[in-house]
Image (cartoon, rainbow, N blue to C red; front, side):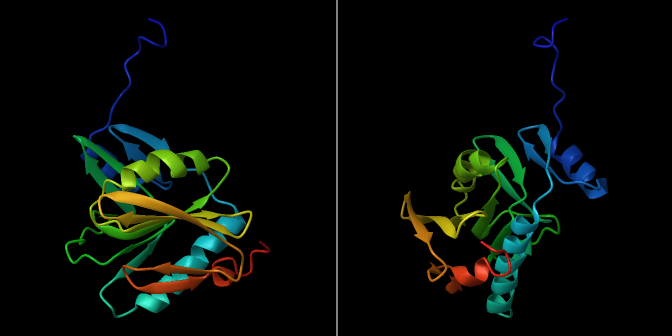
Length: 189
């Protein structure tokens, strides 16, 4: 039997979730297939940590919760299920009660890495944008002070690019402002 004829073993959602609870590493799930996550650079980690710290402090006590790297987002669309680990995300929906994943994120941040940039810019963006709860998707460049912001505008999505350390990221839901100088603090970027 050739490699092309060999059947791919697909995992059920239940098998994936059980495996993730026991796994030392993180894996993303796309319609039955499981993919190991690569480690992140220091700069990537500092940026994600800065975003998390600012969001956590700004949103404390207001009904929203902020998560970093270890909690998944579940996407169910067109009969398919996916689980991704965003770098940082916010959920303000009281229906979001699972300990291991979120169904209702309102804001998602992905810090771009050379190995994941295309995935974050295309596949994940398209999947995330199927979530009715999501209002803002932000791609953060880790090599220069630049964000690409996707905002829901009715039934469509609009993008904008924000550059420079003096710039201010404004998010409508939940209402918050994040200075790019703080997003990139201590990174040398």
